[in-house]
Image (cartoon, rainbow, N blue to C red):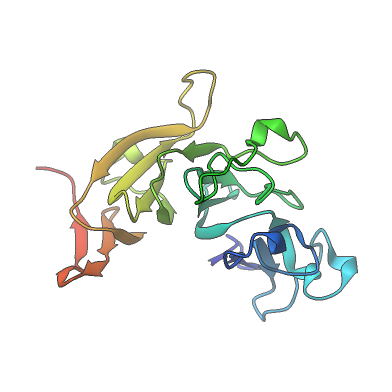
Length: 223
């Protein structure tokens, strides 16, 4: 979840619970980004406010398993989500947009069957960046500190199965694209959470597995 920069709204991610169809069903608030007041009510001005609860909570829909949510310095909201077999996504969240799951994906079903890609269905919003093979994104921040000058203004995404910290560049100008992964650092264990400290250093929380990992890591610039 993430509060808007002015504190007026609370944005929540709501996964589709591996049921697929609810992500396209506007009578459900599954597979969606929700926009609420700080008191938990549907926020005024939501795109489907006239349809009653829970549809009036929805800000965007057609999502799968949303885990990362963060506001950029310019006030725009971005999200990361895990795809099926391939197709993890990073994208700008826009009011009323349909992001296509399960009709389209840049991955395949777990049984190997094909899913049409985003560029085959113009009515769905495409991800700004996607990963295949997956990184299994878990959390995200927008780095604004000064401890790592090369990172300033970049989203930092932690990965589970990839065990990686991924930096996304918003101005890469590579292969005709503007948004792309620019750097990746692999760790020993799955990475669950990331936060920026007041001094601009970065804190990362590992998962524990079979007695290994489960540490809080502190990233500081090399001396």
